[in-house]
Image 1 (cartoon, helix red, strand yellow):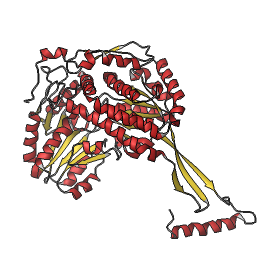
Image 2 (image 1 turned 30 degrees about the vertical axis):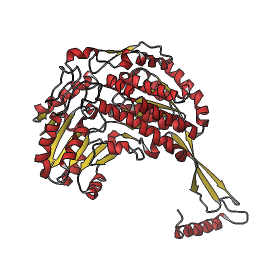
Image 3 (image 1 turned 120 degrees about the vertical axis):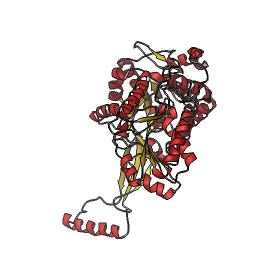
Length: 530
């Protein structure tokens, strides 16, 4: 591994950005009110040094947040959609204008490289613009065909769910804290959100910016605390649940939501596959594969952890890919000089190392990386490439959620499709081929909520007009597109009947009416009526 660094570890002990050292980040915690629990300390992944202490909420504090949110919801719902949209168009501008401070904060809390942090800035701006421009059309009453043409008129209305609970993770703290909240608020809901403690300051930063853009105080609230302490209350008081996290946690919270008969949407784990076909553009595929596997240090639900490379390109692709991985710049820097940053917790470092060691013990070979880099910082791990990983290895089927990918050779495309689909997950996939028609055909056969042709993950994720989500153990529901907003609403049908009731009129028997209706239904079919 030849990854470089910007400075030796001894100089990193003071590597904290101005937004942290100035106390501005700590001031964001004033937005958490009340917070009667015992504060917790949060450390910086780059250095292991303290970022400060975070207030924590008790069950009673969370109950108060829901009470305020519910009291504010009806007034917020009554605000015209275009007026709501104006708030988020202003948020769009503020996020872009003040990106340097949030890039610093995301890096300080999460440890990712700056180029990966910027993707979160772009994502929030993209999401804010899209839903601000489309919400009014999505939410306006829709005419529907009535039962009897000319006699029955039907309309579909959309009503907000009420108070939405959003539980967001540490791996994409800006994109998922802001991106899931924006459509929920535009739909007329209020939101009570619990971000992970590790990256809570990022969530509070975007909350502060939304209020600066004109969002009323109690419409979006953030509470902080361990899921084991306040999780039951969050799920027990909300009218809808948006959750991003592991599949194991998703199954648990889904059961809680189901017990209350409230709807939920969840993006969970993945063991995502990439197919590199013989006719792939070698240079593009190599560059895309590096991003697919190691963006945000592999701590990305849609990251590629399995790569299937066809015989005809294997002996050219693998050496080129391995060299590109070895050339990556690994280190801590609050600029764009590093390709990959740190993992976020010692737990993730231990998981990645355990998966590498287990794979090697079962016969896998390490082509690049394979070890932690404490010389760079306490949570750095080299981007790692394995071959000959057998089914008995943990990382063969289990999600690693770190900078680790296994490469497999294939001859027949049918075999590659079968192997790619041989997983309980179904979140994301990537196909590299110059044959566009063939790429679309193969994509339709992959068991994945999103498939990228000649791109790692950003094409599907960033196309916010299209739905994004998982199949199988990778989740429920979708974010993005019309469903990403309408899931936060209740559909209501209002139908008006004119002139005559849908029943036998006076003087006509039920049997005769049934015959008339039979003739009418047959005629509607012949006329092509829907």
